[in-house]
Image 1 (tube, helix red, strand yellow):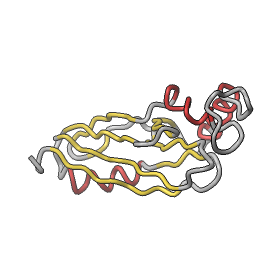
Image 2: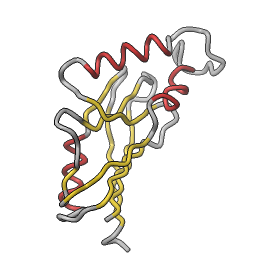
Image 3: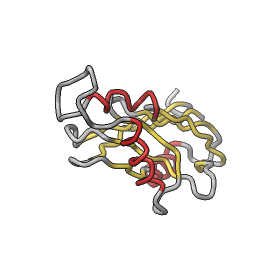
Length: 140
């Protein structure tokens, strides 16, 4: 089954600030090896309760706009029932309901099939967890 389904885990350092991290290059690098020119699906999954995966444009301000929108929707204040960690950390546990912890993307001819301006991004608002794992799985 290893030629049909393969997995790799990325270690991503997000640091102690809220970040949108473009992992498209990591996905493409993985697919060069795992897909080897085949069609299939790439599943991107972050096994954390306080992070998500988004497909969006980066570098033109959309990543900062996403963080600003999340600040508006999920303010880092004392309204949250979940209270351990940094002030307002409860909002980080609500994030995956808005930015899901996964994305499944088409792969054609071994290449990620994204739109012109689309990137695969890890969204991390949790300042208390500077190291993240992202699981990439290819199903051919």
